[in-house]
Length: 300
Image 1 (cartoon, one colour):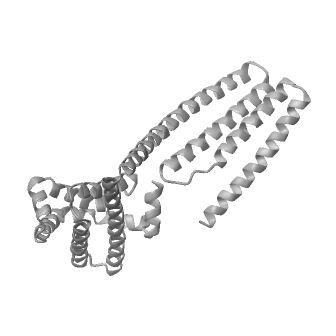
Image 2 (spheres, rainbow, N blue to C red):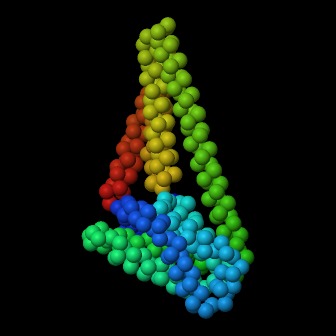
Image 3 (cartoon, rainbow, N blue to C red):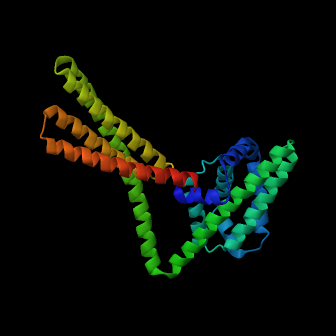
């Protein structure tokens, strides 16, 4: 999703734009059949034999156009949206349709929609914002579809590129699957730590109070770290930046818990000094990494 988010940022496509486009979905839904009918008539009028033959052979092609138009105003504008647009370009290229005709069709749809907004929306300020949001999203669609056209043509002429594309696709799917495994694993581990915390509380009631308190605190520290890891992973799945400071925090908390346990067991002084030194080093590294991440957020 990071790639799609970057494209949206380059076109200055904001959440406000998304909200504006979704707000007119009912209007688009009630007029979609008329728009697609006019679009198909316009495409036939171009006189390209390949396109006209496809329209005859694949009657569902107009249904795909309808789905794309509704998706333009409904979203969600996420990774799945990006891959659907990429597939549009690849399918058109595979069918031998020149990208020129896609650009022409997009231009005709854009003109029809702008005319509709002009006649149906009275609020001038909202209408102006809506037209700007539409132009951005149509340009984003053209950008992604055209890029996939180029990729498909390169694959057509390069066997090595085909292997590379297959590997990249497989790696992306494998990465997505591993992300899901990671999320489920974090959930299971978190539940286990919750159980450990309640066990420590039970030990606190029936045993050594000081030992029980420190053990419970150690479990809470681990639980806090796991929650931070889950939040980081969720943000990453949504397209956010991956922060390495979370993992340094995990190591830092683990050594703090070890120091607590070593103190309870009255282990030799050398072990305690080693743990304290390690905590100080990790704490300093954590501070440096966190400072760097905050700086990159303020100055992207």
